[in-house]
Amino acid sequence: MTRAEEFEELRPLLFSIAYRLLGSVSEAEDAVQETWLRWESSPTAPASTKAFLSAVVTRISIDVLRSARVRRETYVGPWFPEPLMADPYQDPERAAELADSLSMAALLLLERLSPLERAVFVLRDVFGFGFPEIASAVERSETACRQLAVRARHHMDAGRPRFEADRAERDVLASRFFDAFSEGDVDSLQQLLAADVRMVSDSGGKAPQWGTGITGADNVARLLVSMVTPFTRIGGTVEPHALNGQPGAILRDRDSKVINTWTLDILDGHIQTIRTVLNPDKLTHVGPVADAWSVLRETKQSRRSPNS
Image (cartoon, rainbow, N blue to C red; front, side):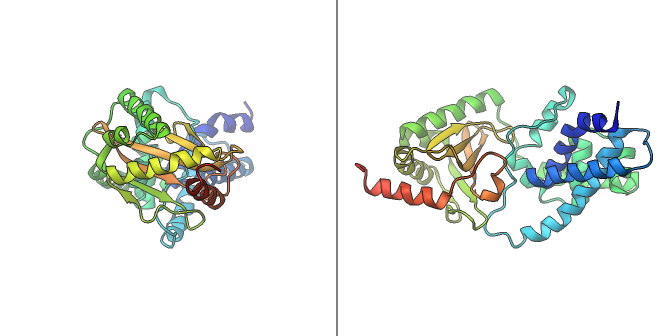
């Protein structure tokens, strides 16, 4: 097998590691490409190609993450990970860990960790690497890595909900939510939303913002109902689609360009959070991106002139 063939075989794993470390599709793809360049120019053949490439992409991602954390301190409004359409890496033996680590909520929890804690947690708890491999990847002792893993698990466990939603029940509830939304059924929406539900968006100052977030079942339900009719009247569509392993949707304009994405956090039989990614820089990998400001103006005009 050639180096290129070995690399392509491991590319899904490398991307999955980098995405969980960076929360960015574009930065993860860049990290994988840089890994290939280093692998291509390496004069020696490692004992384990998987361990070598995983270590390289991890080190690159840690460096990117350190600079990204500085940039995020000045980010306009809430910062969310870039939505991921599907995880390219599959491992039946670690399916649960891979799925749980991909959600928006889990990625936001990972943001609380230091870059080294995040790397150790992802390599150990998500992908099941041994501590000797992890120590080599992050250039720390095995003892230090074990301590980092303990701290990371403590932070992650402290932020996780106590009871996870059953996936089948979650998908049924999401389907009911999108049906109620498309029908403009405010009562059904209120029943599906948690009393303290939050609708929060990441626009990065480059698209319309939902204020600082809409809170409460009544407020969120009425906002959704107020937008659905004028939005569909101007040709907008809501396309249910799993994102980051969660129920979600892609909102498109009449030309099928992407306006934003939604992901739903579901727990205890209700939707707890609706996260909206509006920042156009975070949507280019989903498809051609619409002008959200123009769509908003047209939607408001349609609301004022229902017969137009």
